[in-house]
Length: 139
Length: 129
Image 1 (spheres, each protein chain N blue to C red):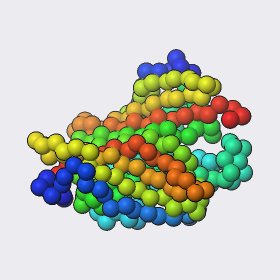
Image 2 (tube, each protein chain N blue to C red; image 1 turned 135 degrees about the horizontal axis):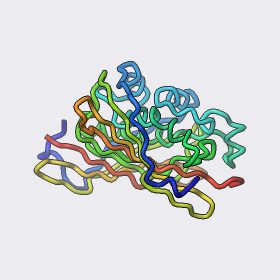
Image 3 (spheres, helix red, strand yellow; image 1 turned 60 degrees about the vertical axis):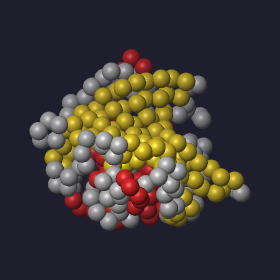
Image 4 (spheres, helix red, strand yellow; image 1 turned 30 degrees about the vertical axis):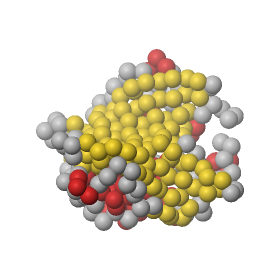
């Protein structure tokens, strides 16, 4: 677990990138229990106005959580986590999770992080998660 | 979706923190140990069918997208433990033909301690959107 003495306001989390594959989205559907056809059936997704299937919001948030856990050093250190899903993520896109330390509390020692997930699309930045937040316990 | 369903509570549903399923989450998200925080949503989906089956709420899952998600932990989940998942409809708003429902779920351990509260905002998109 990360220690209070090593954390400063403004510290950036190392960015974490991954390419979203159809196989990974199916693996999330099976592990997470969300079999909504919006995430598996292109024809169905098109009937809702999307160009094809989109990743689960929880796939994107799970990736964001990976970046947070990697920084925190322990899954158990994450005491709160939230995200607003702002834009869909399509198959083949590269999602990049990041964050920074917004504030630090003591007794108990907690780092409050602002977090996000971005994707480059058609030459501009989209924000699948623009406003994420995490509270991470420090040793 | 029916705004009058706000406040509805549902019976507890059992959920086991299956080690094999936790391992699948860890592998998928590259987390080396512990229960990944977003694994809680697997428990939410155990209780979700009764929400979807609620004719009074009348939520059309085929038109649902996920608006936001949050978790507050009293302690991390433990692999292998049995939890009771209690769902409630915390709020419902209709705007521009889209329905916004916030479903809160408490995960209780065998001692009756709420180890995590999860909140999911689901958006039921207007037909033809």
